[in-house]
Length: 232
Picture 1 (cartoon, rainbow, N blue to C red):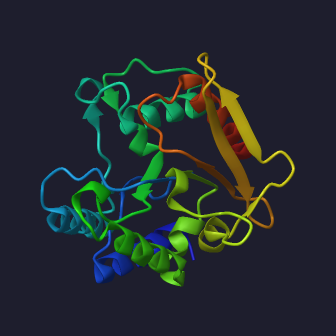
Picture 2: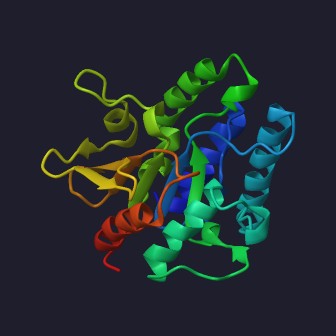
């Protein structure tokens, strides 16, 4: 089954379960899983339905929901700014001075949680429901990208007893050299963890949310791993 067919199944199951689909290019090489949707209004349910509708319309028209925003509309620590920096390092080798954030033409983004945590007491329940949905075969779309970036920190548990990342994304942690640590100029550690599937055709990088004080050097280090995997 090709990616477009897998995406159709994913959109349909999200429609059925009233779950956030995501946005960007579903046929790209990179999937980014953030923490939760950047809801634009006070009505979470409406924004989720709008996102589903955009993607259903995209299936019919062949035009996917790619957002382009002015760089000036996002502060320096905004997640989208960090995503743009990462994609620039991967595909351009340097930072772009473009006035528009166009990273979604190169990636598909979705979220670990379906609900904005600060707005609801049911965020934990919603997260558990989303994890259960992701395991379904109808969600094989999220396990079909050459590169997956879990930029959601401790949203997933992956320790000696519980291996949620392994189970949901069908990967295992690289025991030898899989933990990468970079220290900022102030001595603060930034980490990411490398995983692969059985035949190593898929790379998964698990790290914290890419926002606020994440330094460019750290994003460049992640980009280096991705470029090697993609042969860029």
